[in-house]
Image 1 (cartoon, helix red, strand yellow):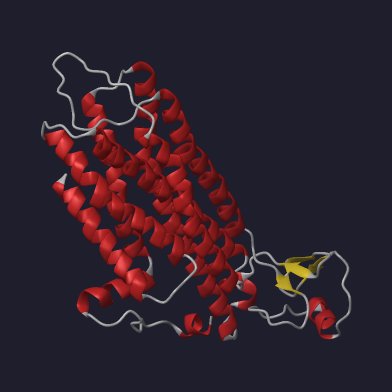
Image 2 (cartoon, one colour; image 1 turned 90 degrees about the vertical axis):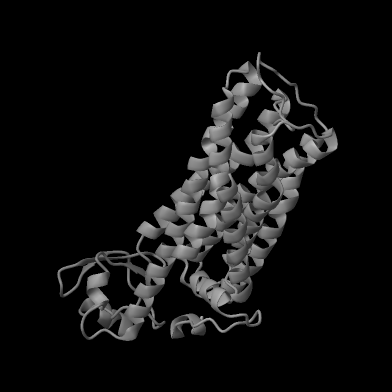
Length: 349
């Protein structure tokens, strides 16, 4: 328990400092909300949770209500921050050029996470919880609120609805990643070479093309949509030849960065579901039937707390910008605006 508590505080503090020093990105705002929620778990929730498992003592109802409310608040803020991260990732894939607008919306979503989490957690301080004691069981200092009405209200808004939204959102993300990006059929810049043959001659002469299927010199079928977009199968083999310019490589690197960032957020979501699903299964069962053993409560609760340790490790290991800023934070004590090395393409964006 001490190891989990210490790792939660140190890991999330380090990532928070790295986010403070790194150059701003739209995904950093909901990520900062996630790190703040996990840090509050380590500072305000886990110490008392460990002491109540190890020692026998009594606390007044006000302290227990504050502790239980903070537990619900931080858990709800964490999963809502993951929802905000998922939305930002979907926006980054479907609208990669609207960086400023995505940044503004990400800030608003990161701020709105906390009022919604407070709305879910605040009733916990005023709704009494029934207590069940089994023969030979010692009374713990603070107990989890197992009022049936509040349990189903809180788990629905803080876990099941957001988790369903996350799964749906990542289904759209994977669908967007699997779809090939369209190539505009006009004189605008394209990361690929225009195919030779009847398509390129029509593009040069600016002649209108009808929706049809065209065959290039490489015997590849190209379908032209009504909006003037070319859907080219195996597009990586068309423009990415030895004579291709740097535009194709730039576009490929952009797609790879988007996929890497999306894999990171998917890992965060999967870790959250793996760590917290057992707890949110036994909580309604115990509130209805009082059938969960104490050892099961302990393992499921601390498995959920482990999520606060794993989140900063996963993101720090998978995000190059956060990793560089984290290394700079640990090796130097500069100002907030430390110059984190970026590639030329990132600087231009």
